[in-house]
Image (cartoon, rainbow over all chains, first blue to last red; front, side):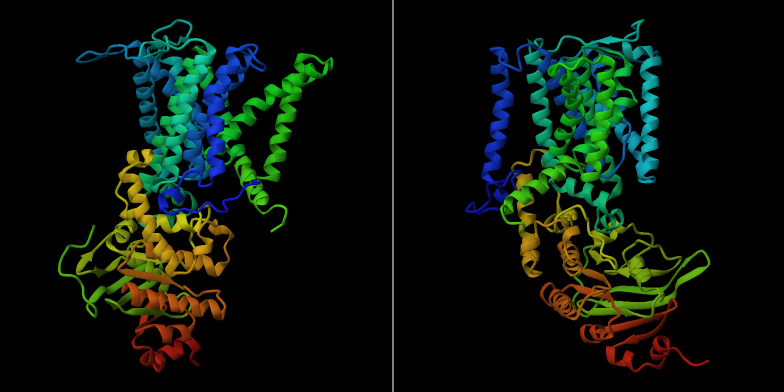
Length: 373
Length: 266
């Protein structure tokens, strides 16, 4: 950046270990948060461009926030702990369907063991749904103790296909709805019903801000160092007293929990009514691409990757129309696929570690600017 | 598997003893019937030609390999099968022949990772990072900064280790092992691939660690000058068999050792 840490002396390690040790970075963060929490609602209230219609919130900002959250979840597992997973869609689905079941009441008719839970309020439903996702994440994480890399990816792929099948075939999860689709219950938080797009946006923003902070704290703490040690050199990590069982399964649990929350938000807040297709293998790949392009092992990268993968096609879609080029909608959508694909290839060749690394390199260069070193 | 809280092992007592240990991989005998001991506070060198079983010996000591025969006694407690993290818990740390740092992390984080076993706050505290969790992190940062000062690597603490030159990587790796506050430090070729200045620096650090922290050190090294200068006692392995054991001077004049290194006419 054009500013440096010059003159900002730290007198305690606590001050030195902040997320943003440089004052200007902290100010920038507060500005971004103020924009997100106050600026956008204000713009929206007065219908100032680009918030003239609900499109900006509904089609861009809300899915961006939710998929960023999912990307943070996968980044913990794949970026920080080095465990490749193709099951993100499944973990999101578990979060969504479990939250739905908790919100509409769980009834398990097992004869002797007849379990009934009355419908729970919205927040506990979402968190319990995420907890279910974490439990399943731990179960599917157990193979990671023996298999690594692409082989583990195949094992998580099994989770993806299995849960796709479960949520289509087991009618209990959809409350025996004949069409197989599910409508979200009212988003009632402590008596306040979230309905308008701006309210939905703020709800997602609160969840994302809280979970991003918690995730950042985890990855820069002791458990985060254990995850990265396991990723970088598992044998050395074990010889230093890091238990692979604990490190890997905790990464699976935390990651699935966050993806479960993202799944519940995706279903309840973004879609409103959904089918199992919403959490298919495509979703898993989409989130994996976000993590790879944004930057493995970076919370910031999760946001950048989500922005790139989600927002770029939408923007490209608008270009011919804005320029007045007369080409058909089908051609545009094909062109968008081609251009997005080409950009991804180009980006991965230029900087295989994604946007987060580009950002770091840029910051280092600017720090020395105008000198080369 | 923490060692019993018996009377503290004082200098000169046996800290670790290896009794008649054999290890084979399929038909290949890596170590056969080796016995020696390591005394508290000494620098013990393990030398031998390539393929003599030195690294296997270190891997046995820290629980990475499980010998088929023999007994290992650490701090008075005989142990059979032991997982590597139990050895770490018991106070055995090591460095590796090929630097095994966590390449994606900074030097500071690598050394902080060495404090893992000493950190007690659970995940939920770490997530919030307030009060006791922050205090714990700060406390361990203090200890790590002491090690950073000791090894004179202050200016690289924020550098990702993959960008550091080899000599400094070796130093960071030593720092990571020291962060565990080990009772027994295993060094696998700490000077391999170094130039003379780097070797001198590393030798000084090893002597300082031994002197300053009182850490017992077992090291594998091929540079005989270094071995003879640093170590109190030397054990010589060849083809998995112990051929000599004693002070550097005794070993230097031992005919079996000379034969093993220089070869004998048949």
